[in-house]
Image 1 (spheres, rainbow, N blue to C red):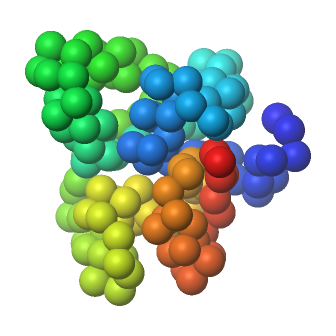
Image 2: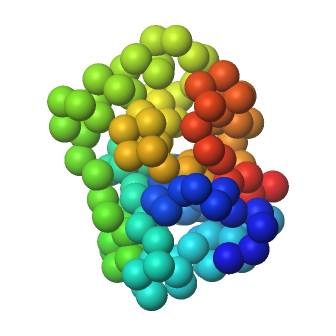
Length: 143
């Protein structure tokens, strides 16, 4: 991988921003595409919480309707990604992050997962970047 990737992190957490960035071919999509390829080759592990995928689903639903949202959901479910369920440990980690930082609940889940799995968050969301500076988890910035 290029030097943009933290060398110490083998796992990456995709947040909703990263998923939408890739699907809509926005700035940073090439970095997400590279991560997806590395995950297919089993060189890295990509993780995505169901809460973050829910955020993608409702954003697409609002903008383009239910049929398009379902298509996006089925597309992402085929990616080489491990989907994380909000079990007690992850949910409480997210709740702690949310209690201490001004960000969305879904962002708190991405951060909670990053802290739990010692993983790098893939995003372009400024609220997550600010939390990264405060909490010290690695970040792959897409902008």
